[in-house]
Image (tube, rainbow, N blue to C red; front, side, top):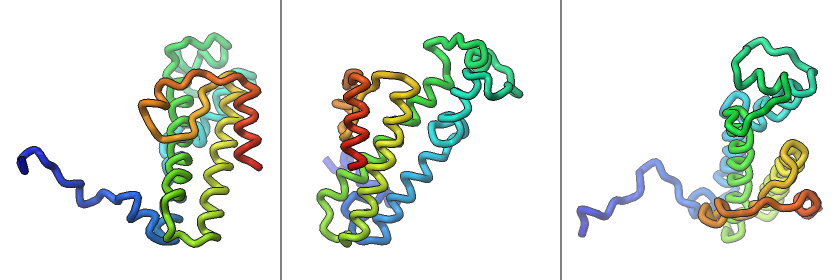
Amino acid sequence: RKFVQVSAPETLLSTGTVFSGDVTALSALAGMYSRAMMLQGSFLNGGNTLYPALSADECVLTLVTPAMQEFSSNALGSDNNYIFNLYGSAYNILYNANTLLESLTGSKAVSKPIRRQIVGEALFMRAFIYSRLVELFGAVPIVTGTNADVNARMPRSAVDNVYQQVQTDLL
């Protein structure tokens, strides 16, 4: 029996540990921002502005690849890897914001001011991402939880519903 039981890696921090105080909870918040900026061309690291600007002829390509050329010629294919990464990185940010929101719900060790700060920043991030997603893609799935099985099957929501979620998160 012990042969098939594997303990957690030593470098793994459990949710209880991360949200056991203000300092570690703020580190989790910083991690959300850090992960959002990891890849060049991802949603919050250039892609959110560059790709629409290329389509609007506001930028000129300096790196000409077939996938990038699709933006300038307004002939985006469904297999464009830049769009795939842009869309996927947006949902990764949403997952991180949702993780913060869910994890704080069960934590009593984080002070009220820090809890309000983290909840406010996570909700703002979620609202910002959805506002840009709906502008870029129209109807998109509204994901407000962290269950991967549920999230993977979420249907697209009407544009009005996405804007309603944005408003709910901001108020």
